[in-house]
Every structure is written in C-alpha cells, then in structure tokens.
Image 1 (cartoon, rainbow, N blue to C red):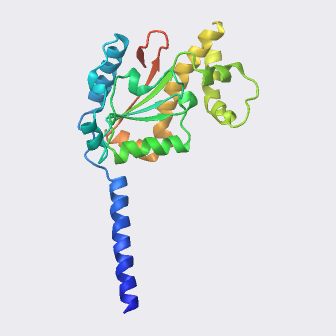
Image 2 (cartoon, rainbow, N blue to C red):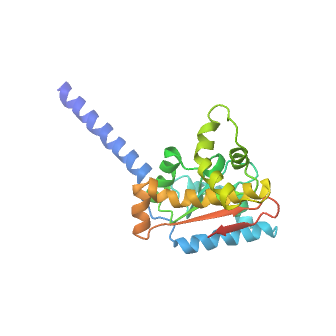
Image 3 (tube, rainbow, N blue to C red):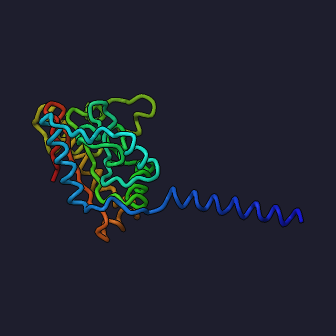
Length: 229
C-alpha cells in the first residue's frame, strides 16, 4: 500500500517537473515577424531616440506587465557591451519583452554568452541577432593599449586581442583613437561572424533561414546606431 502511494507521489512530482521544464524551454510562438522586419523595427526605434521622439509605448503599464509575466516573445537578441551609456532598450526605444539583451564588456561571446543567445534563438524564436559595439569602448581601448590586465579582465582582453591586433595592421598610420574605433568595428563584426562557427545550434538556424546575424556600432556622441558591413 505504502509503495503504491509513494509511486503515485513520484508520478505526480515527475509530471509537475516535466510541465515546468516544458514551460521554461518551450519554443513558443516566436515574435511573429521576420529578421528584416525586426532589424527595421530596431533602426526605427533608434531614429526616434536620436531625434528625441521616443515612444510613450516604451513605458510598460500594469496590463502589459501582466501579459509578459506569463510568456515572452522578444523579436531581437542584442549582444552588447556592459557600458552604462549603451542600454539597448533605451537607444532602440523598446519596451519590456521586445528585446532579449545579453551584455558583457567588449560584447564578446564566451560559452555562457553563447548559451544565452542560443536560448533566445531556439526557445523564444527571436529571428534577429545583433552584435552591438560602441564608440570609445573601454574594453577595446585597454586591449589596444596592451599591458597586463588585472583579475578576470584578462579573459575579456583575450577575446578582443585578435581584433586589436588586426586593427593595428589594417589601420596602421592612424591615431590611437582611430585605431581603437577600427578595433571596435572589427571586433563586433568578428563576434557576429564567429557566432555560428562556435555554435552548432546557431549555425543550423542560420542555414535554415530562421535567424539573421548582423553587427552594428553605437555612437556615444549622437546616439546613432550604424550597421557594419
């Protein structure tokens, strides 16, 4: 009798756990828009930000919060630098639940960052991935300057080092500031190009046309985001 009750309890717990996991990792409905539409939506939002015409809809009310508490369908994944002057939700004039943001100094992609991007692409159905660098990035500046970084900062510098090295060659003869900007752009484009190479999941989604990956740069002075070719 006891063993029967225990078995039932185990079955109930297993069912509850299965349901919880299903909710957490369900593919869901996705954003309902294409990658190109998602990109246009981001750029339109940035234009509003630059022109100081930010939408009132960016302020999420209680009703919207209630809906988002049950599920999320962000239309874009933004891998950006942690710099306090570059908050993606603000510079793209977006509200809660619209963009899935992963922030790390130098907008680099280690396994933990990749896991976050993969989650949003596969399980939330976000069709667009943007790697966003920015003007006068401190992490890139430090890497270009060289020297021995303290603590775990070295892990970030190691990721940016190839871009810094390439910038010193391709932008040779330019000022230090110009070399840094060159490295910022090279790094953003390199990270975007490496995402499907480092992730079989993203490579598969890219091949199947489910996602699009772009690189961009934010200008600290005028607030404009420029796509990098």
